[in-house]
Image (tube, rainbow, N blue to C red; front, side, top):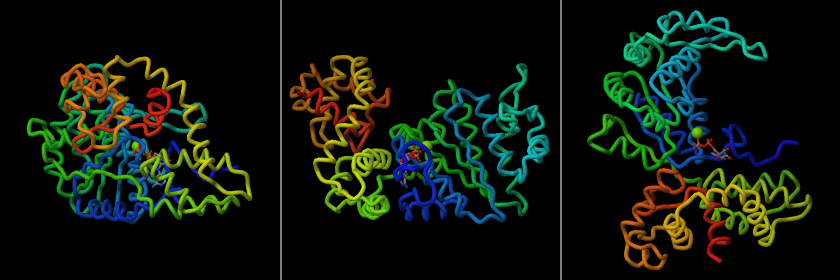
Length: 378
Ligand SMILES: Nc1ncnc2c1ncn2[C@@H]1O[C@H](COP(=O)(O)OP(=O)(O)O)[C@@H](O)[C@H]1O
Ligand SMILES: [Mg+2]
């Protein structure tokens, strides 16, 4: 049986809730060959949203290359990943892949081999002696070459873009800057999941991508969109849920798409057919979720220093937007000084446990926040 609430992977079709305004915004950006940095916390729905928007592009005269940078660790893998994405976007059939690869990226020694299931996979290799610089130029110039002279409209989507900060040099960032400025025909949508890093890359004068494009922060999904989405799914399974319960779910998760779906999934499992959700069930579902995560949360908690723990406890217990470096917060939560709070925040940011939020911070995992409140603040 397929469960009605999906959490984890990319969601499509009926499993995809609303985002109509965002889809419209992105389609317009793509039409106008804009360069846009789309960012939010992890699991907020960036990949699903962009995929939904790409799916609405006209089939004819339009070409898009989606490249996941998450597995890349340096310029060489960046180059081969982008080359692969571009090649695949242009190949109408599997048989054509190698031909296309040779035509555009002959210098990257393309080859097609079979995977375990016998399916063909395209690989590129940068010879050990080869210099990455020219290959980087070649790959990044290709979208504009394809779009030139009445060619198709081209959209390039690098996902998990903050990964390039791990490369150890800013070559890719610098090259991208010139590419972005000169490719008038090509649209670039850069997706990033380190909410605090992306604005930094674009708004810091000292960085190569300073003002290289617009930025588009992706927000949560509003309760008014979750209401029908969640309701319909319960009803289809012969289970009931009222508006108030959906409202409570949205309050608990703050509309965060992944956590909303995850909580709904647990609730749906707890609820017998022909019965309905009530507040007690909702509390039970939260408990189930926290118990499931308890091992991971405990491990994480034990890896933190005392002042990091205190900082997190303070953040979990206070209302959003609290001024964490103010004397009051610092003394209320047993932090020795504002600078110790600052160090704790830096370390937690680097570990992706917290993120910047309107001059304050938030705990990125909504249920970790709940867990800290219920287990650690006792
Ligand atoms: N529009 C949406 N409708 C319903 N669920 C969504 C939506 N967008 C995201 N989600 C939920 O969030 C999860 C993560 O989505 P994903 O697109 O991978 O986020 P990101 O790319 O920002 O990490 C999905 O598995 C799904 O549970
Ligand atoms: Mg993603």
